[in-house]
Image (cartoon, rainbow, N blue to C red):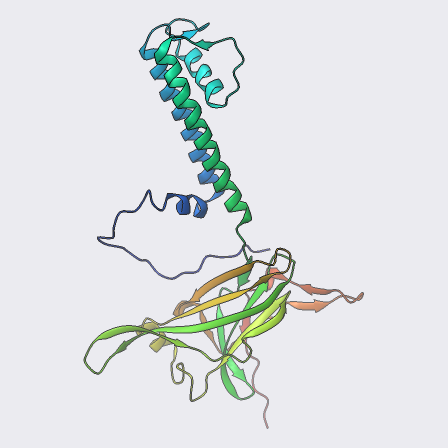
Length: 290
């Protein structure tokens, strides 16, 4: 099964933006991959304990029961202190060591709270797991050229009250000579579904009222056009609102082709969705002579 892909919205550079790294640190951690978060937690944990171990060694004989000048013992004592384990073999000695223990215990509590909250937020964050076709096709449907692409629910549960919106982003020249990037919403044959379980082919008829009327692949490329798709609905298990999005560029459009059929029915009545061919298309068959 293909994993949900990230949309290609193009490269964006932010220049002279206000520096708000620490203000958005929590959001950045939630958006980071689990592997990145795990590496940050491990590196931060080892670095913090190594730093406190060095501080304990700054004043000799601050840890009773530890070997004099041993960084290993000081590091292990720091781990026990930060985790509030306290085996009792090593204990703080003197005002300097006791003050460090108090500070480290507080840092341990704050670090544990932050790591727990970020992990819980990442686990509880609703995700749609919607797969969009890697291409979009333009083919006749009931005698009208129609833009088509499809989406599939890759999770296996229901998405209730699903709705989809498609907008065309294009470069336009105003009467005053200004170059603007404008969004034009596309009218869909069906923009909502009460239950989204398997596959959904989204269609936009390219009639005289369509912003795509008269647009070919060359114009789509030269005007730097892009189709932006957003899909939202209620997760049938958690009843939380989920969102998915994707984008289509000129190199993802196929004119005169159709999607291959990926839905079949077994003998026992089970409906099967073949994800292996979900992104495949084929040329249209020759038109039959009248």
